[in-house]
Image 1 (cartoon, one colour):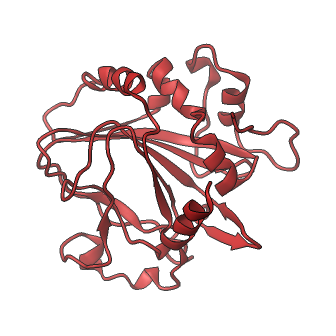
Image 2 (tube, rainbow, N blue to C red):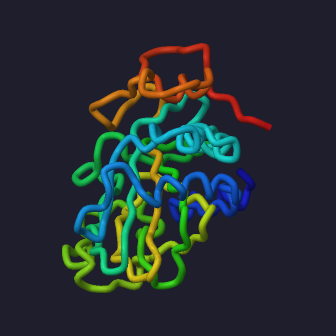
Length: 251
């Protein structure tokens, strides 16, 4: 991470990394998203877990070379993929309430953010891969910037949490197809109603420190093909104590 990226993440709790996915990667990912497993049904939203098992293009996102350095900077060398899923939305798809936050009365046990002696560390941390544009006013990912360090997230008014009243401190995060949004689950965030004519296609890979887990389920390596050694380490269950094999940044 550059010094400016560290400043921005510490300030706001999220970061938009531009142009992570190239045109070939986007084409391969969108080709399967055009007709996702199980189909859309009758609704305006589609969500399912374990998209990392959708084939080589989605498996490659587990340890995308452009993003591993960010995981190392934000979480340290012992990091694991905790769970993954997608959120697809069509015009008119409704919002979801704001959630997250590091305050103990409302946050989950792995929702935390600290910075000590210039070193950033996080609990559950999300990479959202954007397969389509989320332009101004389109909706999709929204958050309260800086709330990852707030001491009063439990005081957020219920009508703001449910998007029933607009508040100036709630922000829709704009991103283009190919961009990745990285955020800490200590940040108050949620889904804003989708208003664009095209589909929202977001792929969320959520990472935990190597010793912890948010999900109650662990990955079955037999569900994948041709996993690299590093991908196997990312998919490993949490561990206690020291482990010699760590994730490495790809130069």
